[in-house]
Amino acid sequence: MLHFGSVELAIANLTKWYGLSGKGSAAAYHCFRPRAAPRPWANVVWCASITPKHSFILWLGILSKLRTRNRIKYLKVEESCIFCTEKETVVHLFFGCTFTFNVWSIVREFEWIGFPRAATTLKSALKWLKKEARGSCWRQKAKKVALACTVYQIWSARNRKIFENETPRIAEMVLKIKIHVYKTVFALFPQSALQIVHP
Image 1 (cartoon, rainbow, N blue to C red):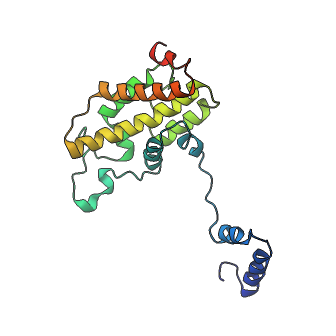
Image 2 (cartoon, rainbow, N blue to C red; image 1 turned 120 degrees about the horizontal axis):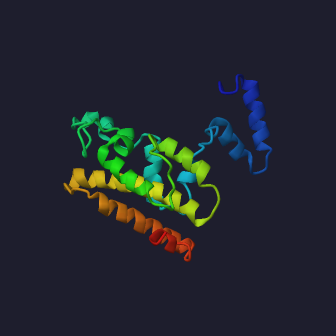
Image 3 (cartoon, rainbow, N blue to C red; image 1 turned 45 degrees about the vertical axis):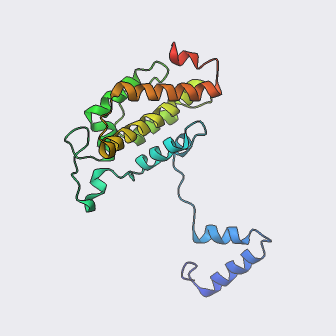
């Protein structure tokens, strides 16, 4: 009742919701649990052409919710990055580490991506992508898929190194990204997909 300020206001709202013929429960729900502010990057992350597991990892990365070593101190693990000696954070893992920087450098060189410069955070990469990847042509889809796939491949390589002691190879990771983007674009734009292989 404190949510409304007084008992009288609470009763007035309950009466109003009751009279909405079937829509009252939705109105009550939105009153007690208002919607969060819209995220400007949401339509890029949750794009239909991006593989859901890639979207999920990208989403966790943007929110800094990935379980990087700086976030699991309670396990008393070493906080250094698996690829270098710096402290592992989301920003470091995806943009500060020399290993992942080399992955991004090659991906940025794909002519069909057109990333103009190195990003420093996932939010800045998505901000650029939101501005540059408007529309529904194959290049715009390829840019979104490539970004999400690159983030996923980096996270996956990091986990394989930790849990399986598998040393990642940049060339293999880049090939996986390129193949995934090609398959996705080919499914949507069969004729244009050839430009990924032969730009």
